[in-house]
Image (cartoon, rainbow, N blue to C red):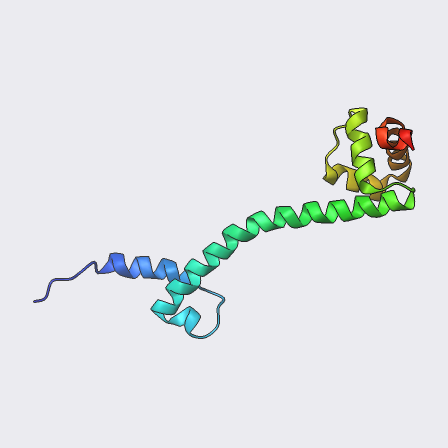
Length: 123
């Protein structure tokens, strides 16, 4: 009688891989070699995209702040520079939320940034 190699353990290991490949079409869900390639590639994409999501959100917040600044006659870079000189340490996410939901507070921040910015004072 031939010796069993791995037996139930191999089936359980493969089952874990196939569960991770669930939701794909065709052989990418059914064929062992394709499943392994698919799951590994999916893991690589997940790892990369966890970083990209953060980058995309920061980019969105900057676009929103820039649009709000342009409406008030100041550029984004001078606004951020003015806030730094004024000692206001709000992050871009909070600045974006303030620009959307509380226009009066954002106007006050713009005025503070204009007063504190050395570039705007020299002009």
